[in-house]
Image 1 (cartoon, one colour):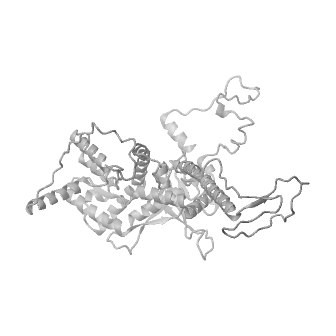
Image 2 (cartoon, rainbow, N blue to C red; image 1 turned 180 degrees about the vertical axis):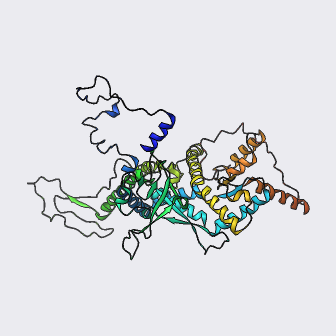
Image 3 (tube, rainbow, N blue to C red; image 1 turned 120 degrees about the vertical axis):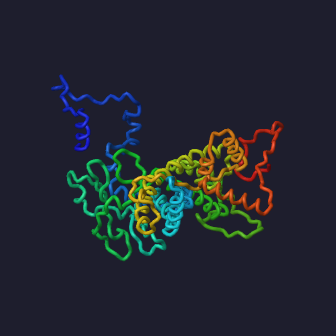
Length: 497
């Protein structure tokens, strides 16, 4: 209440609550809900029994987050679909890594700094660490990275990014962070404005081999720590696994698969079964229950008097295995904004239009994720790197050495189009109608337009020098008036055009 009272006091709007008139002696009135979802009946009482009023941090206690992390890691390690979904999401989001483009008024400095930064990024494997952070964000719910100095880096700038698991960022003693007015949540201290000030980092992982759980920890300033997680609720301080809603579904998929396999194995274990239509007091030869009879291939056998032979029918549930698998995988991938064909690695049931529509939602989520990584990770790394590079390389102008914001842009890998010919036609139309720019079109492919134009100029100059004819984009008239519109039925696979 201190922060809220301070802000309201500045605005001159803080008022003390006044008691309502005429409320003394009244009896408490029971809730009369005007919404069906707010009513509790005998039918829905059990369904809503786990609903609570806990805050974001109270609901995601250290024990709850620890349990969710352990189960999410188990599924990602033992479930092929879970592993593929997590790795595919990291590959699509980070790809081969971001590329820096400075936008200052000094072109020479821009080129030198961009080249030095990319050399440093390759030396520390920045792309690989970002992919690991994206996978940790999906499975663990959050990713931590320390900005440290590593003298073993093959670069003059020795800034490094040291990844830390979420288990290691915690306060070992509950008494240290449950004190009144301490402004701390498990592993993180906050100031009165809600900004993180210090992180508690255990010196040894709680699950490390050949070691006891250590209570020794370091208070790392927030300036040296990068923390990435998805904020689902206001006031949320720690993240939970992004695949949390899908964890029960992974278990159901495994149970259904084992049930189908068990039914097939049961049918294969029994070649046949003897049964009789005779009544209990009827005449039929006596046989031992569950007795087995060995059968020879291509043999004609006879049954005991009064008995017949039948084969076990391996019936499946009313819902076929493929249909159930598709629906549950679609529900699993929905919490990650991933379409079914990417989660399953199978586009057999897709056509061109449906594939494009599903991919639009997925790629929009990827753009949002990249923007978050730029804000929380890459921009902070760039500021620290410029400070280190100013001392080690001497290529950073004085105006950029201590600047908190440097004009720049990040380029990521582009996404391949399912129909390159149609995309090229649309791109040409946009450029001709001046509804886009070369910078925007190259950015879609994750390329720097200035570098591509310079490279193209070199190629054209060399072709002219060697006497080669420069290939120009020839517009080929295609009359499709006699051809049906196949956009809605084009498969994502090879097309016979």
